[in-house]
Image 1 (tube, rainbow, N blue to C red):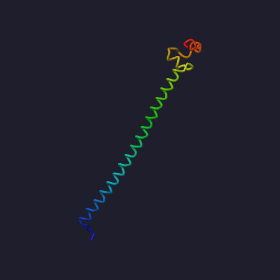
Image 2: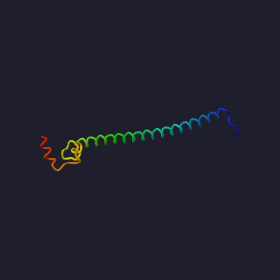
Image 3: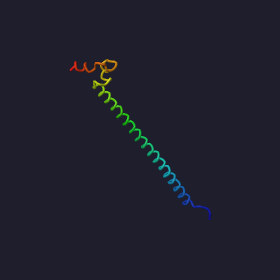
Image 4: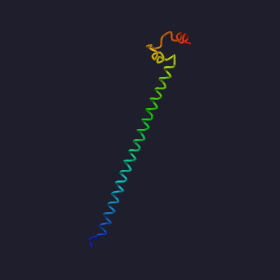
Amino acid sequence: MFARTQNELSGSLKFTSIFSLNKHNLLIQKKLHFCLNHLSVTCERVRTEAMHKVSQKDDNRANQLNTNNDAYWQSRGEEDRPEDWEERIEDDQ
């Protein structure tokens, strides 16, 4: 009465195996989802940092072209903007 047939045991093992595989697949899916989210966040961070560097480079270039800015004068060998900077600009034009 309590003895199981070979077919019943085999079916029970198949169910257990399928259940374990489904559980394993779910775990893999969760890990993959986490990795993809992490990758997405990492890519966004890299893109933001790259855009920030480009922005800094553009700002620096703009400052070096602006006669009213110390970066303009420093890029031309001065320590900072000279007192007579306006006169120098007029003389150059």
